[in-house]
Length: 352
Image 1: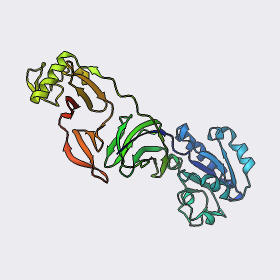
Image 2: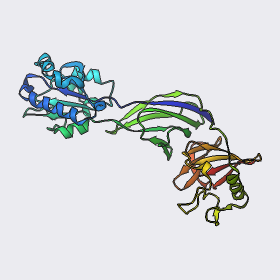
Image 3: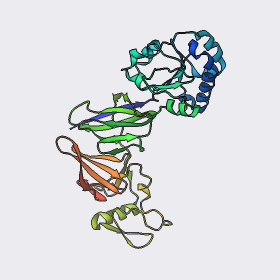
Image 4: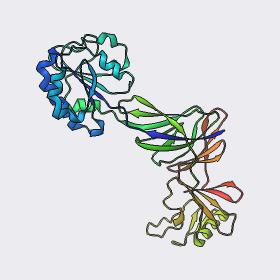
């Protein structure tokens, strides 16, 4: 089993595109198209504004300048033919883009793109009686709110998976592993991953966009982070932990009752924590080393913890389970971890 480390840079989804018809057939509707575009920009956050195109011209125009320059841009592009090929050729390399075409009258070269995904998935917004697509695609006169919603296509989650791949470390606690998939809603910044797999380069990452499309993300080789520092457990906590190790329970100083190992805090909400050193643990695990006179602990920063080359513990809402590799894939074994799990001689995993 290979241990591999990767860094994943999370980027926003591709910016959407709004194509405005400036042909002769759309001329009477220019005030409507301009007002619609301004409304869409006002409805969306600035980082989700679409690039502006004018039918027949592959040059994108910056949306932040539209209000000030709409009339001059229209004058410079007015009368261009109802041709979409130059723009779709520009956008075809980014098939996950949300693309909306707003106008009136037939787009003459659209049949050339009828089998291409970017045209099939485009939003066709028609004003006036003349169809844009002549029945090839569905057309509607969208309101500002409807068009803004369709153009807003951010990444909504990130997923990591692969044949024989098991994540045993990630540095963002909002990510969760379930049924072979590591997923989280963090969509900007970076993510550090440690994975196990029987062969190299089996992991893949993708961003899932709001419209359901996917954007492949690059996994770059990375170095393992330094392990968390060991902390000496204060004598009071050490005595309680050793009671739990020997007897499976300990006498709670707060209520004077016996608590089972794993109940690290008294049920009395007003009671002082019995194990403050173990409090506020992000990952839900701690490693305890009892080989010396004074126990020392290391708080694990992730909900996944490698136990052996072919076994990983996964912290769940109600405890922890052991995931094992069966020779072909990683399987939930049905094994529940004990609150104090023996790792090696005089070293234990505490399920917090």
